[in-house]
Amino acid sequence: MSVRILFIGDVVGAPGRSAINRELHRLVDKHAVDLVIANGENAAGGFGITRETADELYRQGVVLLTSGNHIWDKKDNSGFLDGETRLIRPMNYPPGTPGRGSAVIETNAGIKVGVLNLEGRVYMKNLDCPFRCADSEVALLKKETAIILVDIHAEATSEKSALGWYLDGRVSAVVGTHTHVQTADERILPGGTAYISDVGMTGSFDSVIGIDKDQAIKRFLTQQPVKFDVPKKDLRINAVVIGVEAASGKAVSIERINVPC
Image (cartoon, rainbow, N blue to C red):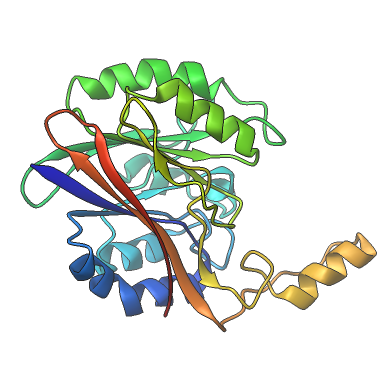
């Protein structure tokens, strides 16, 4: 028996949520998907996430949301994170940080899937080591399921690639998020771990990584603060579909998706 997981790249604002609303059910049917996971850290206005935007994504069919450094951009969401079981934040934040860094979810057939969220440190915050954090958390998740997907939310491709090789054979998939640019390096590593450096972005591609292109250019030209808006044209979903053998937890396929909505 195999499990097919659809992982959707960073959902950016209302346009990203609209893209999922338009296309997700067709993708699920076309690719015989058993479980839908998405990175939702930019789902509310392009920066952060709220209870309302998370609930909207759940209603559309997303079972679990991962995140990253922008999870903290909306004020007063600590209580939301602590009480939310379907939204996880990077595990390698310091002890006492609101929320949780991993979860175990089930397909409709009752097959358990573990999901671990990590954040990179290169050009980002000085967090705990994602590699060592993965060691301990993967060992715990293995007690419940052989199927484990890791979202590494990181800037540097080298750091993501290194983590993929480090976890090869121990997890089912290592998928990169954060840069909003889909990479073309999807593959199955020798130990049976599916890997891609960045799944990409779900939202407007008439933009600079999801942000109004004129505002982004002005920011680069002037080096001054600029209010960023989320454009609404040329909507696309970036995602991957990963097939995993249920008994062994080894990946058997990974397919990159870039569809207009």
